[in-house]
Length: 418
Image (cartoon, rainbow, N blue to C red):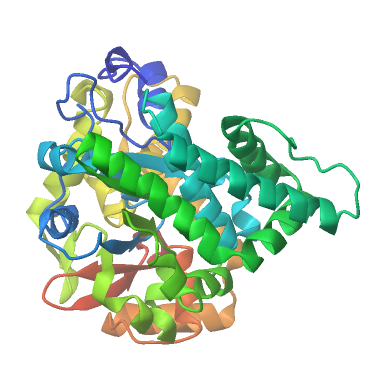
């Protein structure tokens, strides 16, 4: 999007676009903050910025998580616009879904994506790689091609054999994403020489640092999408390998990993982006004005206040549970109903309709045991380890909050259902 597209809505058509559910907010071209960006109270992204700016012996690795819809992608993009980060680091931000199939994700896929993006992004920005590195890359590529041909017993691979390094990386990434058979071949080859791939990554990173005088920083988004089993396999079982690339990396990871016993393996470098507190742990009657103002601003920068009744706005914020994406969803659904009523503004009845739509979705997927657990959470608001608790946190039926201690509550739309 360009800066013109980030414009405040004066009608429902524009407002519908402004509340797109998957809209990570890129920094403005002039280096200023995006006009839609909302800085949350006590923003944990500042902890990550401070940690990246601190001295280190080896480029740091961090594991960044949070509930679905809490704004992780937007915060990572905001981090990129920090002038101190730009001065210290040569940053790359990409989604792992651009490089491979996130449903069938493997640690080898991630390492290949890191090497590929480092190479491609540096070349795209006009960076020159020394002959020795290019020779090393061609040697590694030739070895990969030879082993793939052996695996295929002489048949031609889908990967462009004999292509340039640029074409090879681009082709390999595309095939890894779209073709399971090629993915298996490449994984077999990478597995036999994982140290060779890491050496390639480190040589590219060292070249960038020597020429740019900045440390490569890789922010990998959407790695929180794979299930817990795959997250464990990558970040617990292969943790030491994922720490090997000699560049700074921020991995997004599944929030389910934070609720598992395996969290201990990433604890020291982990950062969680919590939901916005709208009430205290003591009860829903104790409204926290700072949280409400933050989410009201989220709406007000996107559409004119004349398009929503103040009471309806307050109700929409309360129903969101402090989750940005849930608030966008409520506003969008409310806009749809207001249009059907041919109304000029959103009213309480539109917000109630939106809340009931979300509640009906939960009605279809929650069983009796889930309801029993939700009632218990509603009564004590304690975040306790439970195998049954994890999936409910994943689908936002339960929402986590933080002040002095972690606590949780049910999604506000579920209160009427319980």
